[in-house]
Length: 215
Image (cartoon, rainbow, N blue to C red; front, side, top):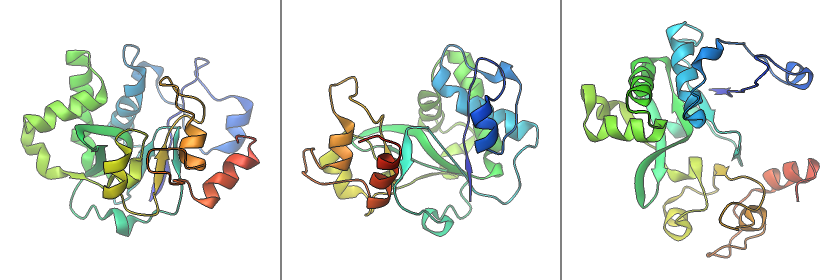
């Protein structure tokens, strides 16, 4: 499994720090989705596939920068099998959550359809994919797997989502600051100050935050 990260810089390239930290490719800036910036990762994946920049028979994991891996993840546990794309929803909210996705190059046309719908309806990637699956365009539903919410665990619906989630939680998705609802997310995930009074982050992830002075 390869971890695919998408980095956007208005300079059209990498700064000095990024050049040292990552093995990367600079791609055409026209793939930037200016009316839905968060959907750029979908348009980029589409671009990478259309230009044969991804490998065959490799599982890729793409996730938002604020989605933090808490414990190790293996291809075997994701278990895509013959499925092309795996992702979770929001728990009680049935819309797809694209902040953490597992896929192979066989999903090429799925990302093509998503990109086309993003631009056609001026919508975001999650609504695009939800529309495609709701209408089962091109029999898409049989090619997508709903994976456990543990791989994209957020602050919403914590009681029901925690019951559903594989433990320990695999991926915690949050901005490590006070969010727009006034939730101190570090307290929420690292110190158990939430509705279930449970520490959600692994010791490994807590130590990483500590090493970077985020406490």
